[in-house]
Amino acid sequence: MADKHEQSLVGTWTKATASACADKYPATVIFSTGTYRGTRGPGQGMVWWDAGIYRLEDSKTLVVGTATDELVTYQFSLQADQFEFTDSESCHVIYRRA
Image (cartoon, rainbow, N blue to C red):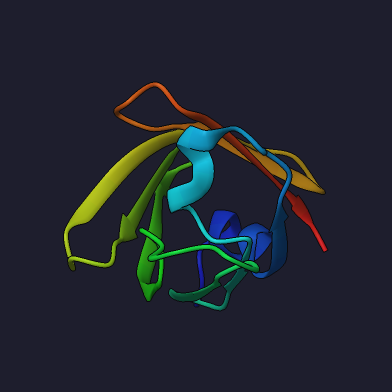
């Protein structure tokens, strides 16, 4: 049975952050149970979150399998229609439920 935190991320999310540091994250990301797929926006190059696995360690810790297959841990917050995180380079990224 899926974790209750995982269920709340399932769905389609659109990036709301326009800063240059967030360009490496997909314009749209679709989370399914345990897997995700990122979609590039117009003119966007390679994305760090392309497709792979993810898991919620707890209600504030997201682990994502990146384009290099590295598992990267993010501290994040999740509300009903928005999630946000800050990466290791201090880039703050916000996604909104589509």
